[in-house]
Length: 196
Image (cartoon, rainbow, N blue to C red):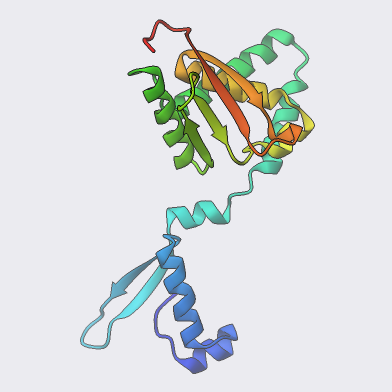
């Protein structure tokens, strides 16, 4: 999009006024979905070029549910149990690496690092460490379509958290059971030789 916004051009080409277009672009810029670049050629007035940012591109194409469901089904359709288990192991380890929690620091610090990593990926999470056992709460199920078809994805997520934290993790509440959130209790028992 280029920034020579006359009312006539906007009304005829887009069916909206120049003011409406500018307001929409300003909102998109504010959300980080669009970036504006000022272009000057010669002695005339500069104009602006608007480009979709990486965040905007991700938002436009953020519909992975169908693909994830197909891949999950195909994974479980692998007939050879050893191959299926190996693929599952590699998927789990890749998810752990992506979270970037490598067992550094005390357990509660690692849990906060895990929550921050999840939040940076769009998960609505919080840590409640006011009780004896710290708890990670997910306010929205990130794999709802998969989980409704196969709760094995809930177990996969629990294992990922357990491996990422280096401590026993228990799924104590689940959205699929009518709870308001999924709750993962960290039992506090180190499984990788870390200090709590």
